[in-house]
Image 1: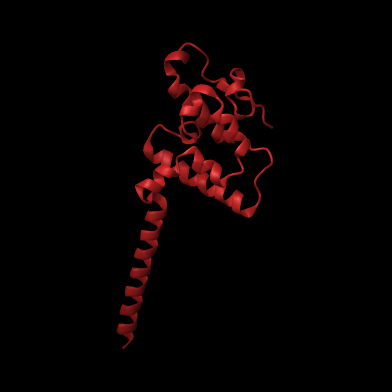
Image 2: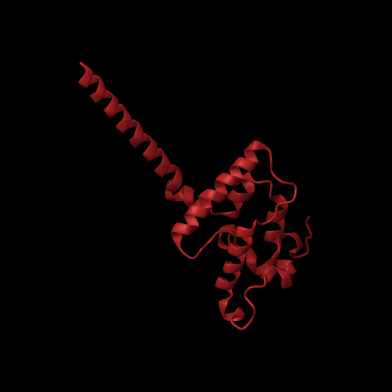
Length: 154
Protein backbone atom coordinates (compact mmCIF):
# COMPACT_ATOMS: atom_id res chain seq x y z
CA UNK A 1 0.00 0.00 0.00
CA UNK A 2 2.83 2.42 0.90
CA UNK A 3 4.65 1.77 -2.37
CA UNK A 4 1.46 2.58 -4.32
CA UNK A 5 1.25 5.97 -2.63
CA UNK A 6 4.92 6.61 -3.29
CA UNK A 7 4.46 5.57 -6.93
CA UNK A 8 1.46 7.90 -7.29
CA UNK A 9 3.40 10.79 -5.74
CA UNK A 10 6.28 10.24 -8.15
CA UNK A 11 3.84 10.20 -11.08
CA UNK A 12 2.20 13.42 -9.83
CA UNK A 13 5.57 15.09 -9.28
CA UNK A 14 6.87 14.09 -12.71
CA UNK A 15 3.62 15.17 -14.37
CA UNK A 16 3.70 18.48 -12.48
CA UNK A 17 7.33 19.05 -13.43
CA UNK A 18 6.57 18.33 -17.10
CA UNK A 19 3.65 20.76 -17.04
CA UNK A 20 5.81 23.46 -15.42
CA UNK A 21 8.54 22.80 -18.01
CA UNK A 22 6.06 22.99 -20.89
CA UNK A 23 4.62 26.27 -19.59
CA UNK A 24 8.14 27.68 -19.07
CA UNK A 25 9.18 26.72 -22.60
CA UNK A 26 6.01 28.28 -24.02
CA UNK A 27 6.58 31.47 -22.06
CA UNK A 28 10.25 31.63 -23.06
CA UNK A 29 9.89 30.77 -26.73
CA UNK A 30 6.15 31.01 -27.44
CA UNK A 31 4.65 30.67 -30.86
CA UNK A 32 6.81 32.30 -33.56
CA UNK A 33 4.19 34.97 -34.30
CA UNK A 34 4.10 35.99 -30.63
CA UNK A 35 7.88 36.18 -30.52
CA UNK A 36 7.96 38.29 -33.70
CA UNK A 37 5.15 40.55 -32.49
CA UNK A 38 6.92 41.17 -29.18
CA UNK A 39 9.87 42.59 -31.14
CA UNK A 40 7.85 45.38 -32.79
CA UNK A 41 7.77 49.01 -31.64
CA UNK A 42 3.95 48.84 -31.56
CA UNK A 43 4.19 46.05 -28.99
CA UNK A 44 6.67 48.01 -26.88
CA UNK A 45 4.56 51.17 -26.79
CA UNK A 46 1.36 49.20 -26.18
CA UNK A 47 2.45 48.17 -22.70
CA UNK A 48 4.96 50.76 -21.62
CA UNK A 49 4.37 54.35 -20.74
CA UNK A 50 6.73 55.24 -23.54
CA UNK A 51 4.46 57.28 -25.78
CA UNK A 52 6.87 60.23 -25.97
CA UNK A 53 9.83 57.94 -26.78
CA UNK A 54 7.75 56.18 -29.45
CA UNK A 55 6.60 59.48 -30.95
CA UNK A 56 10.12 60.85 -31.10
CA UNK A 57 11.44 57.57 -32.57
CA UNK A 58 8.86 57.62 -35.35
CA UNK A 59 10.10 61.07 -36.40
CA UNK A 60 13.85 60.26 -36.42
CA UNK A 61 14.53 59.70 -40.11
CA UNK A 62 16.64 56.63 -40.90
CA UNK A 63 16.32 55.06 -37.45
CA UNK A 64 12.55 54.78 -37.70
CA UNK A 65 13.12 51.86 -40.07
CA UNK A 66 14.62 49.73 -37.31
CA UNK A 67 12.98 48.18 -34.27
CA UNK A 68 13.51 48.97 -30.59
CA UNK A 69 15.18 45.59 -30.08
CA UNK A 70 17.77 46.36 -32.79
CA UNK A 71 19.23 49.08 -30.57
CA UNK A 72 18.18 48.18 -27.04
CA UNK A 73 18.93 44.43 -26.88
CA UNK A 74 22.26 42.62 -27.36
CA UNK A 75 22.48 41.36 -30.93
CA UNK A 76 25.86 39.61 -30.98
CA UNK A 77 24.23 36.17 -30.62
CA UNK A 78 20.63 34.91 -30.44
CA UNK A 79 20.98 33.33 -27.00
CA UNK A 80 22.05 36.61 -25.34
CA UNK A 81 19.38 38.48 -27.30
CA UNK A 82 16.56 36.28 -25.99
CA UNK A 83 17.96 36.07 -22.47
CA UNK A 84 18.05 39.87 -22.21
CA UNK A 85 14.71 40.16 -23.98
CA UNK A 86 13.25 37.99 -21.22
CA UNK A 87 15.02 39.93 -18.45
CA UNK A 88 14.08 43.37 -19.81
CA UNK A 89 10.54 42.27 -20.65
CA UNK A 90 9.98 40.88 -17.17
CA UNK A 91 11.42 44.03 -15.59
CA UNK A 92 9.29 46.29 -17.82
CA UNK A 93 6.14 44.27 -17.11
CA UNK A 94 6.83 44.45 -13.37
CA UNK A 95 7.26 48.24 -13.45
CA UNK A 96 4.20 48.71 -15.66
CA UNK A 97 1.79 46.46 -13.76
CA UNK A 98 3.01 47.53 -10.33
CA UNK A 99 2.49 51.19 -11.23
CA UNK A 100 6.12 52.08 -10.50
CA UNK A 101 7.16 53.35 -13.94
CA UNK A 102 9.68 56.18 -13.49
CA UNK A 103 8.60 59.59 -14.77
CA UNK A 104 11.79 59.93 -16.78
CA UNK A 105 12.93 56.67 -18.36
CA UNK A 106 16.71 56.40 -18.52
CA UNK A 107 19.10 53.78 -19.82
CA UNK A 108 20.79 51.60 -17.22
CA UNK A 109 24.57 51.16 -17.35
CA UNK A 110 23.98 47.83 -19.06
CA UNK A 111 21.58 49.47 -21.51
CA UNK A 112 24.17 52.10 -22.42
CA UNK A 113 26.77 49.41 -23.15
CA UNK A 114 24.30 47.48 -25.31
CA UNK A 115 23.24 50.60 -27.18
CA UNK A 116 26.87 51.61 -27.86
CA UNK A 117 27.74 48.13 -29.17
CA UNK A 118 24.71 48.23 -31.47
CA UNK A 119 25.59 51.69 -32.80
CA UNK A 120 29.09 50.47 -33.63
CA UNK A 121 27.74 47.19 -35.05
CA UNK A 122 25.41 48.97 -37.48
CA UNK A 123 27.78 51.79 -38.38
CA UNK A 124 31.06 49.84 -38.23
CA UNK A 125 32.42 51.07 -41.58
CA UNK A 126 31.81 54.68 -40.55
CA UNK A 127 33.26 54.49 -37.06
CA UNK A 128 36.40 52.38 -37.61
CA UNK A 129 38.72 55.39 -37.19
CA UNK A 130 37.08 57.09 -34.22
CA UNK A 131 36.95 56.52 -30.48
CA UNK A 132 34.33 53.81 -29.95
CA UNK A 133 34.46 54.21 -26.18
CA UNK A 134 32.71 57.58 -26.25
CA UNK A 135 28.95 57.07 -26.36
CA UNK A 136 27.63 57.90 -29.84
CA UNK A 137 24.70 59.90 -28.44
CA UNK A 138 27.07 62.37 -26.76
CA UNK A 139 27.79 63.87 -30.20
CA UNK A 140 24.67 62.70 -32.04
CA UNK A 141 22.24 64.24 -29.58
CA UNK A 142 19.32 64.10 -32.01
CA UNK A 143 19.55 60.29 -31.94
CA UNK A 144 18.36 60.16 -28.33
CA UNK A 145 14.61 59.84 -27.97
CA UNK A 146 14.49 63.10 -26.09
CA UNK A 147 15.86 65.24 -28.92
CA UNK A 148 14.98 63.54 -32.17
CA UNK A 149 13.64 65.13 -35.30
CA UNK A 150 11.53 68.19 -34.70
CA UNK A 151 10.27 66.86 -31.37
CA UNK A 152 11.82 67.49 -28.01
CA UNK A 153 10.46 65.38 -25.16
CA UNK A 154 11.45 65.25 -21.49
